[in-house]
Length: 349
Image (cartoon, rainbow, N blue to C red; front, side, top):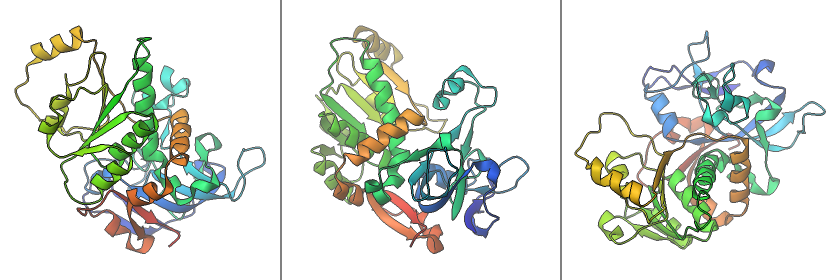
């Protein structure tokens, strides 16, 4: 079968390979791949900046944003041929740590987890994959192709889950205003879930043209390209999705009292600049503000994601996916284009 593989640590080593069928050790459910989402992590792996092959292997099957249809499933597994499914990315560490033992592998405490298509487990970027029943998520058939958005949506579902848990420290906390920084797929999906919560929505992004402003407007939000336009805005929640160091800096201390800043973007090290930590600490303490980071998702967040997408306007979701690339032209999906929002490799094309 065909699979997109890469030698982690070696730049531009990705290729479309002929590989053996997935082994039974990967899971008892056999899935035919329909689509594979592409994100910044995939591009980092292809660039040789990230990723680990399975033990004893030199190449890694790429891909962690899956969508497929079950071809084989044993009786009693909870799945049947024809089911539309996505695969969870992370697997708990073998110890396990307390978080992994509780089913919260997204909060792993010792770093010994593995991840499909990223860290020591082959991904979903093959014509077929196998998966364990406990790490497969059955979708409503009505979601169709948009099921490929479940994995990135699960990441922001966790962000919202933890934001709301933190907010619940005060019985009076009732957020009204949301600011999302970054209008990539994660930022726009965070905005979608904020709009579904009835929040006044603001999105900050550097691109004035392309599909992003209209996508935000369709959610009832206001799109900003200049941070100075945010002067006077004190959001109750900030979802920081760029990972840009200067944007992160500018979001700290910007919320309303009792406000929450969720950091969902990863910043490269070495980004140093002057910062008045005294003034910031004073604001944080006196206004009861919170800043926290979040990554990955567990089964609960995948369920939240599927529900959010099921409640979204299908026309909006269709506009979010700006390119569908056939598997034969997979390399084009990894190329960045100015008007890209979400790019998907179509295995059924």
